[in-house]
Image (tube, rainbow, N blue to C red; front, side, top):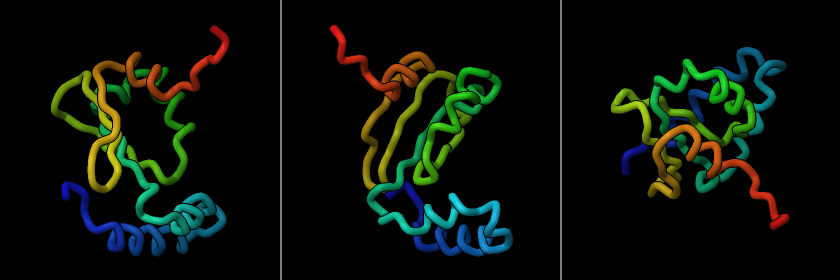
Length: 105
């Protein structure tokens, strides 16, 4: 398993959130989710310079963890704690995979 022990991460999160619970409401809510709903989104660190990507980040709920990679500037993946469920190449592919699909065709 590539990902660290969720229990240790959650324990640290709880301590950080409880230092300022008014600002940590979403963090406290994230502590209530079962382990199987968490996802790690791996994207290139270079995407942090793209305004379109930065504007997309707030749409991720607290159960999503962003993991910025140095390996290259195009590939991305979304994984649960056991396996990767989605992957692709490029920001446009990332956005297109995550945007709601229009059913009018």
